Length: 438
Ligand SMILES: NC(=O)c1ccc[n+]([C@@H]2O[C@H](COP(=O)([O-])OP(=O)(O)OC[C@H]3O[C@@H](n4cnc5c(N)ncnc54)[C@H](O)[C@@H]3O)[C@@H](O)[C@H]2O)c1
Image 1 (cartoon, rainbow, N blue to C red):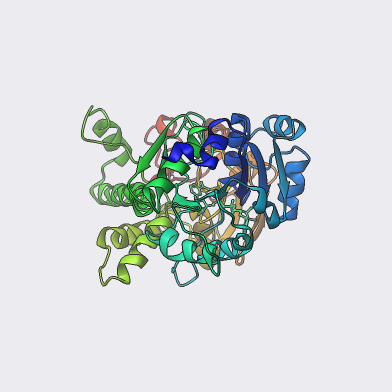
Image 2 (image 1 turned 60 degrees about the vertical axis):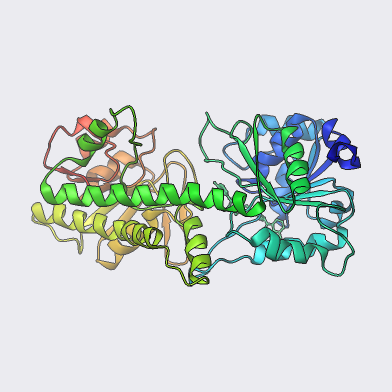
């Protein structure tokens, strides 16, 4: 009976001590939700600046209010540290470290390995460990579990509990949050599932226990592959519509009136963010090791990664129609973030579009109210200070990110030529030939 285990009662009355490992876009909101529920939470991160900010009661993640963090820190229910030995006092541990791809597009699980090695010495009986980082099926059982118990006499499902629970947060979204988005949980054993579910039930509105850790790992990859493939499909529909002279946005709006059997996805300059362009590649990588080619993923990836080049070809065509060459033209890119109203440039197609425009000899500037500086391995740019002046002085404006605070009427009025990859101008353009779309 799981109810008779010592950990169960601590989770039941919320007296359990929680450690959240990794205080980024996923970890900080999670730590906040757990602390708000009444748990005593410590966030552990090697990044001293994040730990210091947390301990000052300051949020550095848009989705979390500073007032919320401040209240919890002052109440003593949330704090940060760089000291992994605090795990020895933790009853529950959530791991929210990055899982990027290497340059070769293979999964880089070094952060999971490193965190496992950091906490292994402090593993103790009656604790639950949950991996939240997105990864390929099998990681929790085949990679994390052996690292956690290396050289220790701890039996999973009996002495301690291990599960996977995918984070599903959509940064910038207010209706579905860490707290009210159903939390899928799958353990190494059934007892592990039940204990991890109990942990999250204390703080989340709804928990969905599933049969195994692998089901939970695969669930996340299905969700993000579904998005990636459908975005790839609608991007190709946009290219097809362009060939036929049909407005793709009119087609999508009309199709979306169907009350069943259709889900609206919109085309754009390419995929961005830490999840949709990357997560499905975990799956295709894993399948390659099993001699299977994930064809939908490969095809969608090919179409989506081709979109920045397609956008630049449309800019070239639009300038050509005005008797100008891409080389030497002043091009202003609006929006560097990968989606509206956030400050995240990870994998943003804006970076590719800017790079390709520069390679073609254009003089490129950008504006983004959320991103004052753009520093990457290949780019070093500063957002133009006066948006409308820069619009007026540019040969072409390329709308990459449709931030809601932009005054699109003013941009339209002043621009000589606009490539609108998001249909941000909508009806404003009214068929004006100076505005082109995908
Ligand atoms: N950002 C999202 O929208 C999102 C959504 C769902 C799932 N995810 C997944 O969640 C995971 C975390 O993503 P994120 O966006 O929060 O990343 P992030 O880069 O914002 O945060 C990760 C944090 O982990 C810290 N860290 C690095 N090594 C560590 C270690 N050894 N121990 C403890 N902390 C360590 C980093 O300093 C950083 O603060 C990834 O697997 C990601 O795919 C992200």
